[in-house]
Amino acid sequence: MIVVFLGPPGAGKGTQCKLIVDRYGLTHLSSGDILRRERKENTELGQKAQSYMDSGQLVPDDLIVAMMMKEIGSQSSGGYVLDGFPRTIGQAQELDKALVAAGKKVDVVLNLEVDDNKLETRITGRRSCGKCGTAYHVTFNPPKTEDQCDKGCGALTQRPDDTSEVVQQRIKTYHEQTSPLVEYYQQQGNVKNVNGNLDIQEVTKALYDVLDGVKTSA
Ligand code: AP5
Image 1 (tube, rainbow, N blue to C red):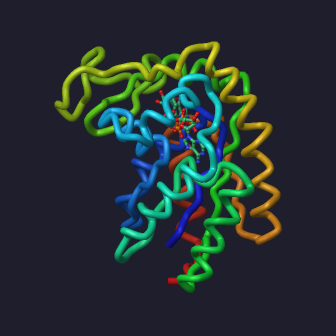
Image 2: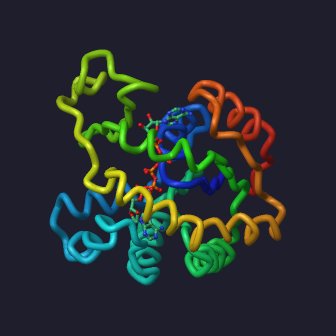
Image 3: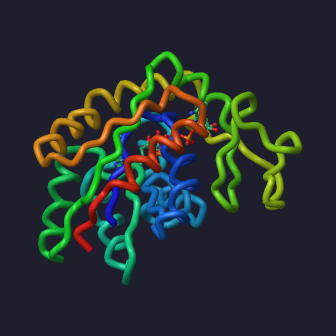
């Protein structure tokens, strides 16, 4: 199964991906996580991406498409969830071309809808584990021990782009450049809207209901 996960920053895409991948035998491919790994390793791509990410802008399409095609190409079998990619119409067209060439298609687009006024609280309260990638929230999803990952990885950190100022730019960027993808995929008839305003567990249940009903091309 090939899943595209759409939704504004802080909608809960990463949180939900971690909860659904095991159940469906999928791999989680997060463009944001891959970029953060590149930055940590101080690669050329990581250096090029840094200023865009820290200011809430999108990294240019050519860099992202090359990065994600490499990740997708390394998936030998099974399906995957694309979290944070595609994020522009140009990226979606490149993905479609690559999938058609491989005799595949996007099976479902999960569109996680969250009201703008909830996003800033979610993002500024996020604390993430730099090792396993698990995201917590100081109020809505706190770790068992304050500021420590439940999986024993160590201290949690706050992303540099999770400040109020950058969050507002990220939300603006989402509305301008990424939300048009909902219509793009609606024309392909595979969008499922999911209410992301609910509690984490209720959202997970709604996603299971959608994914249980998806007929895959694989
Ligand atoms: P990326 O890492 O993809 O960030 P994002 O899309 O802004 O998404 P987030 O990771 O902020 O949110 P999320 O939806 O995963 O929320 P989460 O589950 O953590 O991208 C970062 C940057 O990289 C971009 O700005 C851009 O510069 C660049 N980039 C990445 N991909 C790109 C691309 N394709 N093209 C160009 N540039 C690209 O949840 C957030 C918080 O809320 C957590 O604390 C969580 O515990 C809490 N929470 C989750 N669900 C709920 C709920 N239901 N109720 C209450 N709290 C909740």
